[in-house]
Image (cartoon, rainbow, N blue to C red; front, side, top):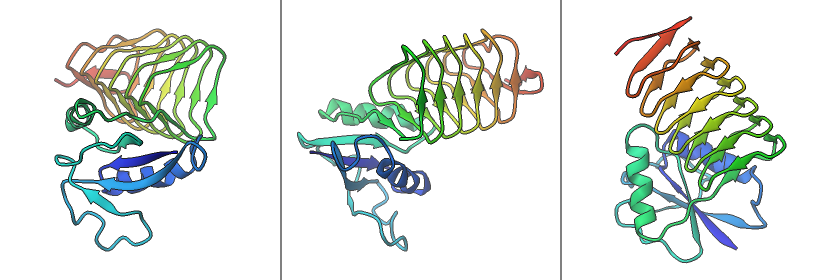
Length: 209
């Protein structure tokens, strides 16, 4: 039995705890050991959770530990890579309500939230956070280290490169490419390529910076 450790004990970490208990493999392949967070008071006032074990910076992974990361933004990849460098392994966490189409591939360390759909022949890379009620259309290609929020729709053939943030309720149209390190604002409708490192918003989405 592996022991799951949740990185970050804030609101998203506590949400991740609930999600982990509802995901494939819980109670059979893994249990939940606790949290790590550099704020050692993060769970104060929040009963009914497993313990906060250590700071992130000092925790040494054990051979039967596996991890999920609740931290978002620019710190997410750095934090995860520090754990990997110390020998940590990340759980591919798939909620029991996820629908996976034929020939779908999911990379190590990716998280798929409740009621998410991954369409036929889609590929999802490593270490992505794809939140609840999101749709990834057929033949889409998602790289590594992306954050895709709840109620996002990626229409068929969409390409999402690496380290992007696609926020709540956004829709990416058919065959559109979202290049690396770009941002799509909430509720935006994207109909053309999003260039590397840019932010777009609106309907249709336009470049902000």
